[in-house]
Length: 488
Image 1 (cartoon, rainbow, N blue to C red):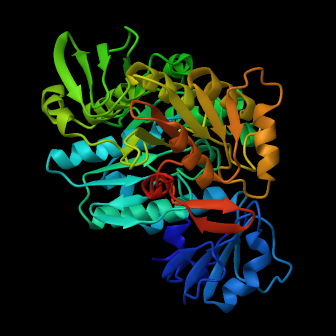
Image 2: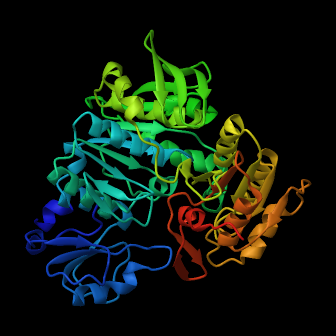
């Protein structure tokens, strides 16, 4: 693609010379290590590395032009000067991949909890309607049957546009994207034409990054303030959880049409009379004056809310409620989300990704509704992340479980003992143990439990690794449960 076409929408601080306009760019990259002839290198100022220090390396590896926001010291380097290379990268990526989001039905899902479940359910519903789906998110990126490993919940804009282009090539109908607050604030979704934006909820998390809940909310709200601002745009819909007070604030922050949902008696799309059992949840679904009796394998009111969000998103891309309701019984629970794991102790062992106070509380409240006997909760907090939530996590675990076992959960560069100390300091309840080794903590809970008890292993869910210092080791809570053996 010609360089002039790629940078057409960028605000250039230096004019593009005529001879440069005709340069044929074969690839766009922000990785100076990539060996690629005729490439365009965009220098990004990242948290750990400034791409401006890697320009010579990029040119040595085949870059014929670089995009910068600071003039290179070597004036012989061919460069384009912009005020913000992150913004320019999104604009260039959208042009290079021929604006793939315009050729797809794209749903963006944001919120503290529920993003993964909602996007996965949208994918399942799409597939059940005999259309092809794709999902981008925390667990993985999936394009039809192809699974692609992921590092961030929301990839950078270049990767995201590349993935969307692959979806177009694979004839995907619906793409469901988890949209994190980091991704929104960092401009990773710039240039994407969302058809539907979904808000699940907002509770404490990521305050190490956003500092305040208001900043956190404002980051989330960007998905909605950027939705449907063109009056000619069709089928733009904001699907908002009306049970969440932050959701109500979003109403005035989007020019798109709004569909509200909830489980507390308000919202256009509602679930009422929920009956929660150990293997299913039954409720009455109401929409536009009609009622439907529904049964789902998803357990808990919080999962019913996630299901409503997914249904609302599907309505936003043109499906009818009568098409969707018959599909609900076929929906499968999401990996690592309230996932029951068989074990030799014959107790109910549940693995869940809950890693925020609100998420953990909702899971434990659901367990209380179905628990015939005692509840054990194994949980920790991640290192190098929001420290302020640690005592709240511990308090929730001790409030709803008969016994909590506090352990490590991706301590990263922090001392695991200090993380747990932060959790239990000033706690008045004493119904807990500290076992830093996560495998031993899981096995301790299974040792204590008897048939009829429920053991919740929270925090890691689908994850299959443990990050300790700079080491990344294989670790899967589900494998630890299955490997448990009763001592002779």
